[in-house]
Amino acid sequence: MREMPRELPRCKQIRLAISKCDSNFKWCFMFHSFHQNLCPTSWWKICWLLMTVWGSTSFVTSANAGPEQLKDRLLGEALQQWREYEGFVALLQGEMRFKHTIDGKIIQDRNVEFKQNRNCKLYINQSLLKPRLEGEVLAYNTKYAFTLKRIAPDHPWALAGREDRNDTASTLYTKMTQRYFDSFFFPLLRIPGFDVSISQLVEQTSFRILGIKMVHRNGEELVQLDFDNAHQIGEGVTPIQGGTLFLDSSRSWCLRSCTLQAQWRGKTERTKVTQTTNIENQLADVNSIRPLPKKVIEESKVYYEQGESGPRSSSWEMVYDLREPTQPPGDEEFTLSAFGLPEPGGIDKRPMRWYLWVALSGILCLGLAALFRRLAHRAKKTK
Image (cartoon, rainbow, N blue to C red; front, side, top):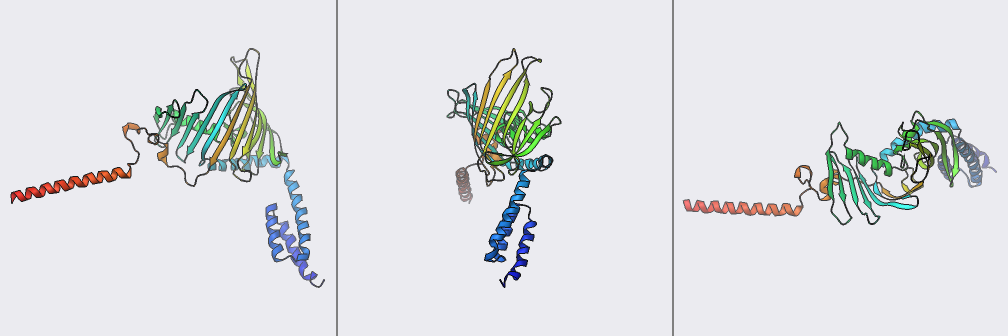
C-alpha cells in the first residue's frame, strides 16, 4: 500500500502515451515498452485492460469508416499507392501458366515467361496444348524491337520481324510487348481481359461511385466499391459499364475480386453483346504490404441479342510465380544475340569468349616471334 502513490503518476503516463497513438501497432509497442520499464507487476493487468478497450474502440471506428471518408481515400491515397506499386511491379520477373476455356473446351494452355528492366521488356509465350506447340517471343531493347517464332520447343527460334526504335515513335512490336505485360502481368493493378487499369477506370469522366463501404469477405477486411460507368458502346478506354470492385486498402489498394458488366457492338450497329465477368485474385503472401499474385480465376457469361450468336461462357485460370530480383537482367538479355541470332546489320554483338581471346593472343605472339626471327636472320646475312 505504501508504494501505490508513487506508481500512480507512472500509470497516468501510460494512459497519456496510449491516447496519443494512432494505430493498434503503436499501442502494442508503447504498452510493451512502458510495461517493461514503468508498470509494477500488480498493475500490468489494468494497463492491458485499458489497452484492449481503447484499441477495440479504434478498430470499430476504422471498420465503420463512412462513405465520404472512404471515397476521399480512394481518390487520394489509393491513386498514390497504385502509382507506387506500378514502380515496384516494373522490376518483377517470373512465369505464368494460363488456361483458356470456351464453352467447356480448353483452347489454350500456355507457359509465359516475363523478363524486364527499366529500359527493356521480353515476353516468351510457349504453347503446351498438343498438337500445336508453337512458341513466340516479343521483346524490345533501347535500339530495336523484334518478334521470334518457332514451331515446337525443340526447334530453333526464327526471326519473324524487327523494327528500329527511336524517341519519337513506338514500334508495333513495342506496343504488342507492352500490351501483353499489361494484360497478364499486373492482375492486382489491372483488370485482366479488359486492357484497363483500376486507376484508368476510376479516373474516367463517366465513372460514378454508387456506394463504398468496408466489408468482411473470406475473413479479410476489404473495401467494396459499387460503381456505374455507363457510356456509349465503343467509346472510352474500356467496354466496362458498371460493377463492383473489392479493394484491399491495407495492401496498396490492390484488386482482390470484382464483378463487371461490359458491352460490345454486335455484328450490326443496332445489336450488342453483354458480358458479366467475375474475377478472383489469390495472393502469394497475404502478409506482404506489396503483394504478388498467386492465382487468378476469371469467369464470364456472354449474352447475345436476337440474331447474334457466339460463345456463351469463357474462363481463364492464371497461376503465377513472380519474384523481385536482387539485380535486374542486363540489356544484353533482350537482344537477338541472346537467342543465338545475329544482331541487326549482321554484326553479332555477343561478347567474345575468354578462350577465343587467349587463342587470338597466342596466334599474335607466334606471328610476332616469327617476324622478329626473320628480321634477325636477314640482319646476319647483311653483315
